[in-house]
Length: 336
Ligand SMILES: [Fe+2]
Image (cartoon, rainbow, N blue to C red):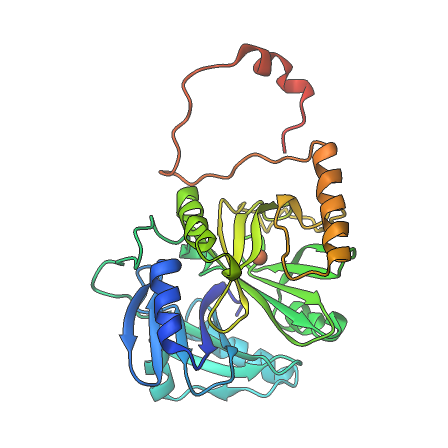
């Protein structure tokens, strides 16, 4: 019955041409369908992951959460109904549109449209990135993460933890309230930030090579107004990333090197260092809030905050040399 990953998302936008350009030439996704009213983007072996519709308000319009199979979908529908959540069965036409076998549709307490599905269609042709990137890290981790905003996060979190069984990864109480949740080895597939407004903060897509992110950053530097947050590294999921404004004006985090967690042994904790080990200067903050954020980052640096890089099989070469003084001191040096 449990959700296994974030499988797809829908975004409403009047700027389909801008999305086609941003999705392919900047993010490196593959445009697979474009009509007058919609476009679909691939990220991997699946037929589609991101669907942009022109008939919706600007911003994310649905989140597609994956379950294992038909039995898990039926069990989830029954569980939601038992919990008093209204559930609609997706029509065959809708399942066809989503390129899945079957789905159900429901809403969270804030009115975000959620879909749960099983049986995503796999494409016959290999993924052809829209820009020469190595690819996206998806698989069992899903397509990335969604960070939503809420007027009062306490009103929505129990729905996700008690009914949908999301597990707390960690949380910040200062300088803002943010709670991060996992359903697989990705540190968070979902998070909520208390901003005083219900909506979307950002979606994150993770590439397989660090250079994919660096090269996107070069592209963004050519149009600096599109940068929402400078290059930096997060303390909790270890992601090296930057944020850019999508054509729908919400942020897209483009990252590399997220940590894998073991949900069976993970213990959530409060993080107090601020959101990042370095960088991530949030350009939209007031001068005072930026100063406060900078002070936190400086403190983290002064404390020597650091974590190892997280690599995937196939995207690193191990240096063959040894560094005697480093190894001699390694036991005394806290790594991680
Ligand atoms: Fe993020």
